[in-house]
Amino acid sequence: MTGWAPFNPNVAILTGIVLPQGIRDPYVYNYFLGVQRQLAAKWVLEVNYVGTTGHKLFRAENINRYPGSRLPVGATITDNFGRTWNGNGGFANNNYGNLRNWENSVNSNYNSLQANLKKQVSHGLLFNVNYTYSHAIDNGSTWHSGATTANGAAAGEGYTTDQTLPGLDRGNSLFDIRQRLVFNYVWELPGKNLHGFLGAVLGGWAYNGIWAFQSGAHWEPYTSLARLLVPDAAFPNACKGATFDAAHCTNQGGDYNLDRGANDRPNSTLSRFQPTRDQWKNGWGAAAVAATFSSPCLACTGNLGRNTFVGPGLFTADMTLAKVFKFTERVNLKFDAQAFNIFNRANFILATAGGGAHNKITDGSFGQAAGTLNARNLQLGLKLSF
Image 1 (cartoon, rainbow, N blue to C red):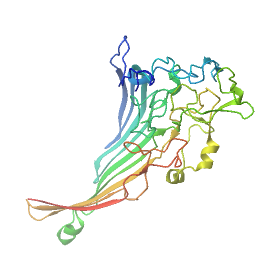
Image 2: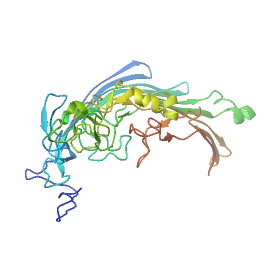
Image 3: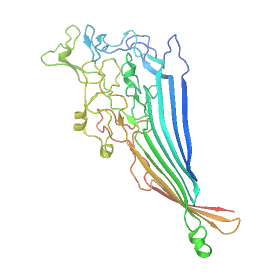
Image 4: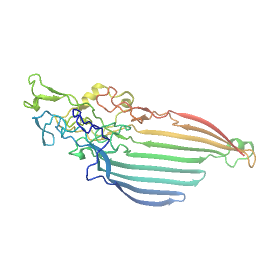
């Protein structure tokens, strides 16, 4: 980030600024309440409430900006919050460029209901069912860029949408998985007590598996374009300072609130929305994007909240069939047949580490998943013990 304005001969490259008040250590509260009850012989139900609240978490903020500062000097405008701003031609203080400040400005909370039903071993069968309903909320899930997430540098994961109203970015955390169900089991198949040839062939088999279902993580559409102020043809001077006329000056680029933060969310006809599997596979297409998103009024903030869109869910089932062949008291051979994602379901990836997201509304592949998790994988194994 350039500490000094580019036209200043004393150019400094800064990784971060700490103001005189300094920074504090973040702190976290954890809270828990649980109930456990035996329902019948070998059956146990456990229900827990688990919560975590974080305060004064770190984030980086560009403090040398305010809404409307990118308007030409002399221009005045009222935003969609009823606030009046004066154009400054660039930064809040034009003696400097971007000033990335370290702040203790993020709060978070996580609340969950966690239920577990457990059957202890009886009749050769044991299993566990675990269900979690949770909600994670914050106003920034990463310290600055979020570039390794589905959201890239979108507002809240990069700088805030509006540093004067940081609450605009309070919403679902990047890692908010609302529901998750996991079922695992081990079953000793009938035939354990057989003897002779049948016992050798049919006895001692065990079947186990893990099934997992979960809803998707959250993401947000945004634009990284810079502003592009274009006057109406009949009013060629409408975007100039002395003759500025908001009614006839249109922003055809990004940075909707004109604060030099090119990471803004647009207006949207959708709020909490979960795309179809076909959209994850092929993207939305230009017509759907144009029908869904639009630019807010000049120097205004888009109505789309942070991380209101839901990513692709997950379903996977892993299974193992195993048997131990005993040759002598000390020598045995274990055989395993394992299947991962046995139903070969295409589990779409919201993003891959280092990028791969398609959440910029200017992306020709907008809405397309970054790929899929592993396809079905089968493997056989033998282990000789002596």
